[in-house]
Structures are given as C-alpha cells and as structure tokens.
Image (cartoon, rainbow, N blue to C red; front, side):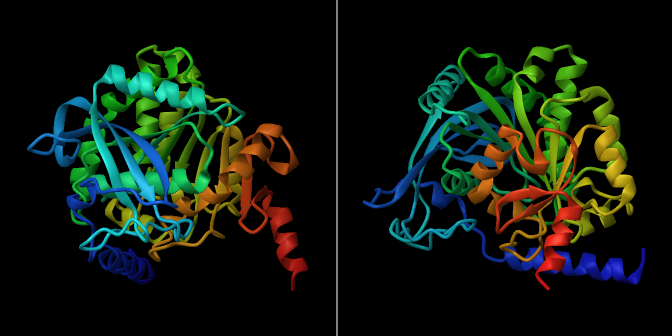
Length: 377
C-alpha cells in the first residue's frame, strides 16, 4: 500500500468522522405538527431491522427474523436547499427543518396496497415505485430522511420505498455491516418480487447506494438463481450509486444476473474518498463506484457487460467525501429520465460510458464533454 493511498484513506476516515460527529438520534422520528407552506412526502418502509421497544414505527440496528413495514410522512421546510437535509435541532422547527409528521406501522398487505395506490395516482411516463437501498454507516433515521430529501427534490410522484437493512450506523462497523447486508439479501429479494409482480404497480426502479449497491445486485442474483425471472422482468431502471463492490465480484454477479433492459446504470467518481478507504479495507481491491471512465478497459467492459457507466464528478458533495454526490442528482433526475426514455442525444438506451453535465442536466460522451470543456477555455 503506497503512501499516497494511505493518505487518501486517512483523509476519508477523517472526513467521515467529522461528518458523523453530530448525528441525529431517534427522537427525530417523533411526530410533530405540520406547518403551512411546508411540503410533505410519504415514505414507505420495508426493513430487516428490529423494531424499537415500546411499539410505534421506529427501528434499531438489530437484525429481525422477519420483514417489517411502515409508512412515514416527512415535512420538508419551505427554505429547503436541494441536496441537503435540514436536520431538526433540540426543538424541531417545521418552518426550517425536516420533521416527522406521522409514523404508522403497516402489515405487508397494507404496504403493497398503499404503494400500488400511490403509483397509480401518479400518472405519466415516470409513474411507478422507487426503491432506495441505503449504504454502509447509516442509521434508520438517516436513511429515511435521505429518501425524503431525494423524493422531494425529484418531485416525480409515485411511491417512495425505503429498504432499510440493519446497519450499525458506525464508522467502525464495516465488517458487521457487510454481514448485515448478506443477512438482508432474502428480504430484499422478497420485497422486489412482491412489488414487481403485484397488478398495477407500474415501473419499479431500484437505487442502491454504496454497500446497498452490493445488496441490490445480490438480491437480483438470488431471484435469478431461484428461477424467479418474472420479478426481474418487472424491474425498470437499476441504478447503483457509488457501489461498494469488488470489480471481480461484480463481474461474477453479472454472469448470473444477465443482461437487463434498460442496462444497469453505474454512477461513479474516481475521486470518491470513502471508496478509497473501502479499497484499503478490502486488500487493495478496486471498487466499481470508483471506476475511471477514461480507462479503455472500463470502456470495453461497459459495452461487453451491457452497463451504462455515468461519471457524476461534476455534482457537489455535501460532506466532502465525494461519496454522497448521488443525493444531488435528484433535482435533475426528471430531465435525465426524459432524455433516456426518449432515446435522444448521446445517451439513448444503449450501454456505454457517459459524463453527467450537471449544468445542462444531460448525459454526454466523454469526448463531447471534453470538447465542451476545452471550448470554454
């Protein structure tokens, strides 16, 4: 391990420690009154986390033997900045901060009926269900509010579903979290099948971030191995944001998953500092989320494996690790989806390498992006 890599790892850990120095506790899940002018979003939850003592719809970092379901209504303040989460302070203020308006436990039957109804109410090309699978070092409340932020910023309607697995929410628990995503593989596969095969669900999109990307691909692989191909066929976009997956492992997963239509989308940044730390912990094994799109080998693999690899380095990072850029994508996601579904521009529905032009909210080939940059000089 070279000195430069060690410095990158140390820097990533220091940044993560700074970002995690003051984290919201479970009290942010306590319902408070809504205020006029605030936007409300509904988040449906399917989780392998253990319910918190005392009932209600809060969850711990314990592993549950069964899936649990819930519905949350989160209020987004009128002063909300896209890409950010305005966390409640000691006394929640709905005029300036995200707050929980309601938290309701659900049965699986209620969960499926309500997500189906929410998808049906959102008519149009982007109607459907979006499932977010969070990454390593997330508490339940952090994953819940992150999805609420993305849903509010994207504003595409449909049903927002959080699949919450029992992350310890601790920087020191990387190995424990890896075991917890493995523990949750069957649970996510069940949720995917239940959502995609129910009548009237519409399009089902999967977004897996970081270690949640590994869990997402493993769940699809599990469905393939068990011959549950109807569930896989019911998927729309599968998006892996900064996926914390060993490149060799990913290629083995794809041998079973097969070619999906549309292609799997990888959101990557070669300067992702959190993935530099992950690479170090994994014995210097390259991570999929840190692919360099200028590498000819990466370009060849994208075509041969039917992958759409998108460099999102132009997006801002809220915490300085460059690992959370995907959250800023929500504001321009509708425009990108329209471009992809229309098959317009360079990004049509094919696999390949693309660069996100954040200012123009479009996908470009690396060569066109480079030309645009040179033209501005």
